[in-house]
Length: 202
Image (cartoon, rainbow, N blue to C red; front, top):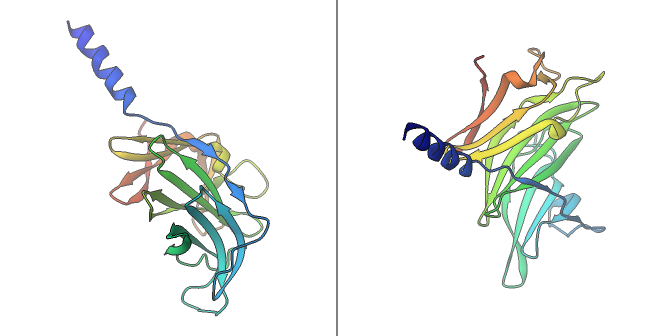
């Protein structure tokens, strides 16, 4: 009886754990025309949703740089629903997309210059975007910190999102507290609407 109960709990627990699939949406050859923005890239997630990476035409020292803009189709026209904060002096704002079975998407936008600075994380669910914070981690195996995206392990359970890592990683790449660690010793977990880094206890 005890063994049977244990197996049932194990099966139920596994059924609550979901790993998303990486998707590769269409990138337009020509960008949409957004007033007051210079577009770098326009991405079509589906017939109703667009992601645009753009920079404001007007400089703002308090909110400069590339940003993510989400547009949704309403009455046959695309309207801006969300604009992220600027990425500062980052040369890039390169998004990668992961989709769960309920169509919720996680967007990991890479920041960087000659090397990766880490990722900004967004959730797109039912036509709304939420900002989940920064993953301050890069791949630590090369000469310079590089993108961590291929070495991420993304999961979702009843407690929210969990982001783990494989191989050697750099925490705070390019910063004063830059440090190389085994990727398996850290993870990010969702706490309300934020992702927080946690150290794994062996």
